[in-house]
Amino acid sequence: MNPSKQPAFKSTGTITESELTELYGSMLPAELVLKFAEHKNFDAARESFKTLNEHDITQTDNFLIQNNRLSTQSHESWEAYIANMFLKVLINEYVHDKQEKIRVRTEDPVQQQKAEELLKIRQSGKLPHIDLAGTDFTVDWRLRQMRETELPWKNISFDDFELDDYGDNYLCFFNTKTHELYMPPDDLMELPENVVVLEIPNELHLDPVAVAREYGSDLADLLRAYPIRENLTAKVSPLTDTGLSAMIENNIRIQQGTMNQKQNKIGR
Image (cartoon, rainbow, N blue to C red; front, side, top):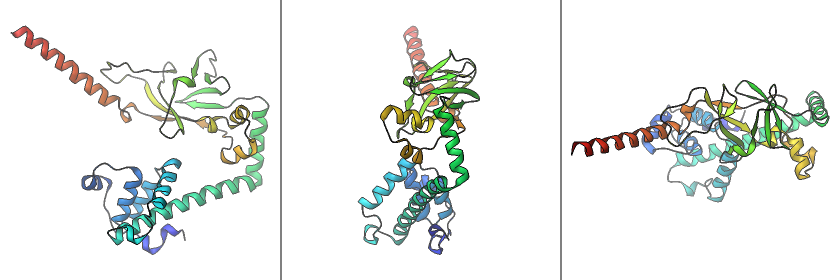
């Protein structure tokens, strides 16, 4: 039995995320996990934990240890203590599972053979490919660009991307019709058509071989942590998941305010 499934962590509560938000306001992902657990909805806490990325988990683990959150004396209630212990158990399971995946990948002869084949293909000079919203692009980390495979004169520069807060992914607005990056103007008044948000894995995931060559890293060590991926795909999200909607609302308010001022001047 996984430690997080032991009887002490059996769900007896049914509180929802919206109810927690009403009680405590907006929360960080790790805080949400704790509050679910504190209210004994361990199943929801476990699912919420799955939304944390590796940096979130590492920072949360450091916070628990450095702030002595695993001691009963650090909490006003037994429920809060149990919630913190549950979160630590989830973190330990995550670390164990990650290490186990690496062990299996390096010891399993089938996966090892596949990894060797992918490495041989890459070292022969074949560059990685990635799917950007349904269009195949060739990744050339040395030149810091991705080229549309069927139309190689059309390329996207890594210099035009933004990194997320943790450096795990490159972010951009992408026009699915023209296959070009979209730069929203400051006076945007409506969401553009055929534009989505892309999350593109960073270079360690895109092309660990090129990264090792560039920085003189030990390739074998790097591949243990960042194995070559056979199928790379960017995560696609709609514009409604971004801050563009709020930006548009603000621009509309500004425009309306300007129009009202002009009308007031005319009426004087």
